[in-house]
Length: 118
Image (tube, rainbow, N blue to C red; front, top):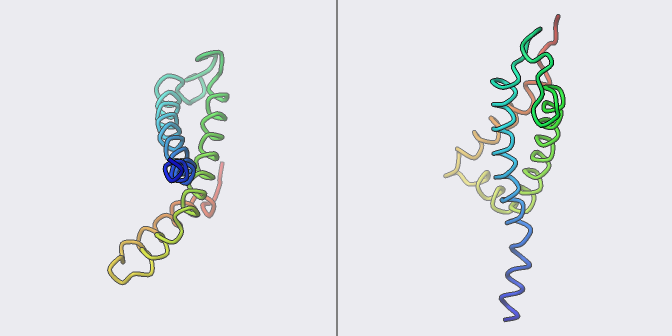
């Protein structure tokens, strides 16, 4: 019984992170679809429309903050599994690991490097 409790305590945090990431991903998909199709953008697109008492901007803020929370959880997940990540990246057999790392960095950094114009 004692070893079972130790195993539960060791697995509790990763499982909660996984469950939260699944729920967050589903929420992000739902709010993203709602922002595009139910509260459309544009000058008159979503003007005055509300969903559960929130406007397009309120839902957009909610979508953004859930995205930030999920980013923190992904970093925490990777930190908890760092030994596996390191082995996968350093292994010659896992060149896909290097490609995935470079693609992830590009996806994260490209929006910060793009020019903004009016």
